[in-house]
Length: 159
View 1 (spheres, rainbow, N blue to C red):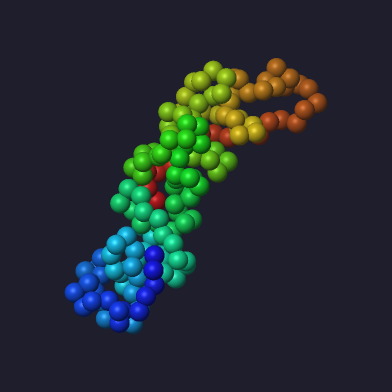
View 2: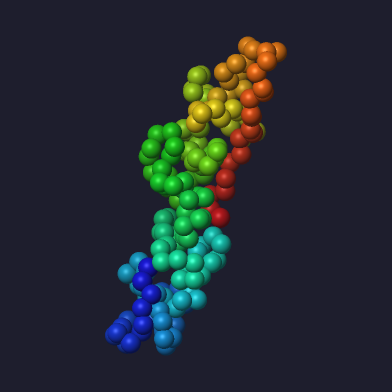
């Protein structure tokens, strides 16, 4: 995303990709090979004006995103934490401890059963275990503190 003065822009190129109107403002934004009013280049999720919050924006699946929403939706890399493959913008995902997973990849490390919404699981040192296969399950009455558990929740497709 580039913030530039409109004086160097040919008049024919000064229509906004967001609203379609002419850009007569002193400043305009250039992003994704198109020009934008500063008020029109917004995050598809949080509606923040991207020119006001930084110098970068992200685009995936037809959405324009601020850094925070891109990371929230697709993780730091936009890839599944289990298989490393890209996660399409339209695909539903599972999340655990800030990591993002394809639905098919969110499974127990021991039995490989896929965890479904509502299933209880344990996330230990970056590894997912179902309730049955969690390490230390046989030691429930030992001196060890109880393992932290969570319920599986799916995220929405988009914001």
